[in-house]
Amino acid sequence: MVFYPHAVDSATGGKGWECELASISGVRMSARGLNPFNGSLLPRLQIDADGTTEYFVVRNGYGIVDAIKQVGGR
Image (cartoon, rainbow, N blue to C red; front, top):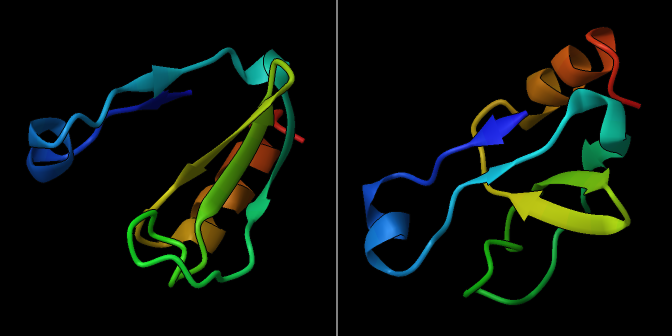
């Protein structure tokens, strides 16, 4: 699994992220939050892997969750 930030995120310090599919212990869409600076005003893709949780603002998050589950993510 690989994530590349878009140009705006890269310019403001956003970093890429990757992990092996086998290390994913959970994938879902997170609940909305109240912080306008971390993307949580919208549901975010939540990936639990290697004992950490990462959140991603993506388009078609529910479709991505389904795709990850189909190829072996939990």
